[in-house]
Length: 326
Image 1 (cartoon, helix red, strand yellow):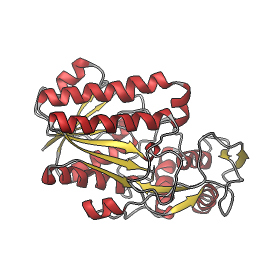
Image 2 (spheres, rainbow, N blue to C red; image 1 turned 135 degrees about the vertical axis):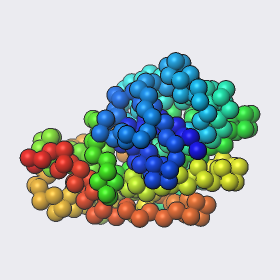
Image 3 (cartoon, rainbow, N blue to C red; image 1 turned 180 degrees about the horizontal axis):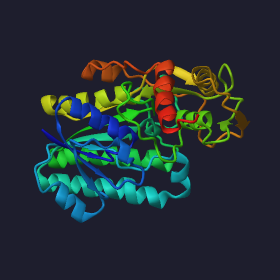
């Protein structure tokens, strides 16, 4: 089976490719390499450098039969999306719609979409399940919701089957150390903690220390990227066998605060990891926890690597590899 992975040299995309390779899929990767890393490319996979908004790239991609598409080519910084929405319109929305048009024109009808818990906005109850109201609080989350809504129409009008996987906070690296390329300009907590640990960043800014949580810092649901990868392939199996589309959350259903993660990272790395509490960020809820019951039931999926210790330990190994003097 031949599958396309857009953004396949990036952090999450490369872990998807790794899982697809393990299962002997024929994988084609498209990545413009602005966020991708050459270390994350595997020699057995065909690679096309380019943007999915480029008609010539899409023509080349679909010149041969593609059976399914895994889509990870998108900007994902929530804060940036509020100051530069045009960037997110062009890449996340326009890029995805051009990709979908090319898919339909070529006869490819299976689409695995990297969505986000950002579609929910501030939680009205916890844990958040798929029936929670959809009210994104940043433009990034809106682009994900907009694409999900369009996918429903593509299903109805073009027979395209999709899985939209809403994940919470992806973290960790391949436990076997087969992916060594770091994220470029990361904006999430754990990569920033790692950058402080290796000396690439002076200190960690903790946004708010007076939330209604046990230690005053935000609590988040973290999911190991290898667990995400397995869920994506299971989602493809589901839509192929069931001939129906799917929207599910992917989370560990465990919550850790910023302080808990920072203290555990200090213990695992043996580094001081300097931190300061600064003003809250607009739109940061105190707690975000997932319900992944639907994914467990429909996909027979269980997270294996998503303990806090596993997340931080697997990341530390990769950061030490990239910063050997740390």
